[in-house]
Length: 553
Image (cartoon, rainbow, N blue to C red; front, side, top):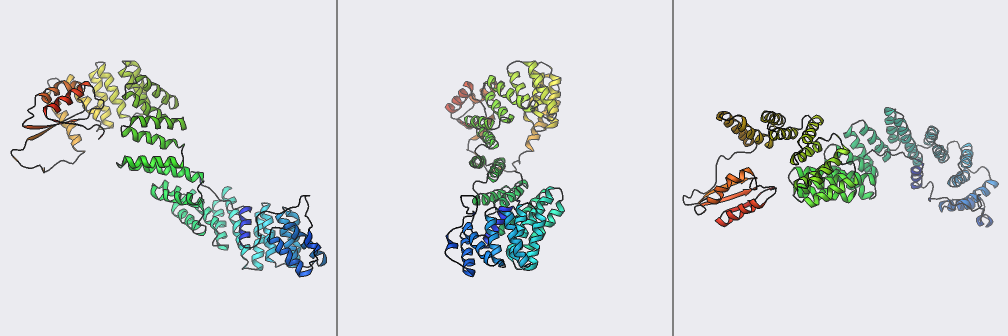
């Protein structure tokens, strides 16, 4: 998103002159032999003022060779006609014969030292050769001769802006700013001077002033795509994504193929998608990510974020597609490889998960998440030494990575070193006091080394419960009807209604409840249901209870 600068060069200057009737037409008309073609108008016998008038008409129609011949015939008969020298000079200038054109304008100035038109054209030729100071001097002379001569003021504004940019690029920023303001003093409507001031003030991090300058540039030139684009950059960097997007839309409305603006739009839409997703509107987030790809179909960050969103929506097939696309368009996206590994691990495709984690680590060798995740897979596979090595590397790479300490604790627990396990869990909780995994793992481990210390276990469980109670507002009143004959509602909530240790002792109350006099609701947060989950569901429903799957809701 580099700033785009306007160097108001000769092409822009010639356009300006055309707009003021100075040089009508776009391209010179040249003969086939390489020299001006003398054609029929001379032979028609135009003389004096008629010949001069007709030459001007031909020049206005871009017939520069024909007009040149007439101007020369006029000057052969009377070498003191200033207008003929100027007309001849313009024709030569339009046929890229700058040196000869300059001589004609110089002759005109000899005859009429105060001729603003000739002085202005000399300035144009100087500028075409890159001689900006001489050009500025010539324009100043033209304005001194005729302060109201608009082409001279417009051309002077252009060359002063070019001088300002040259000074800025050479490190003389303040002098460059001064030149831009001089340009605006000469021509208050010259949009590129405002634009370049915007660029300078942006680089100086004076963003309010920069925005003001860009806005003035856009007012003077409503089709100024670069100004809208750079305004969008400022708003985006301020976090005002809606305003940034509005600016990019204005930019693309006047310049639909402006690649920088399209790329910036994709970035802003992706950021907005992430913002609204974090605020809870995941569907709108997905819509913004997709819209970003409309503007830049190979923008890997939008694809990656679509993968994240679809993963959170439990649409794992779609998540896989977009993670793979993100990696295809950005082979350095280790995060996409890591997240693919997470999906495959959760699907019990451990070999594929290992492949993805190793690919991520080949891109970012110290990527703590992939080091940790690879350690988790090795733990599941029973490769304890390899698992410990990976998790320890994750902690070295990121000493504040709380989950890695929890996983290290699991390794110690499985190795029978309960004290070390508890120490690792507590390190995790120091970094992340609300870590549910470490909290419950610590409570479980304490049962093995604090047997008989019921008060200590009780306090630990109570503190853990209070920690999570603080996260949610507590009920102070209940609006359920006070009907004595209404059945009592009993709810069970657990993620462990599958082949898990908890399921063995929870099965009895689910089966032997008195469903006639009680309303039993079972809330299942099971990630991967199995045969035991299905058996529980069937028994609860058969008894007249209610079963609700809540994972992901």
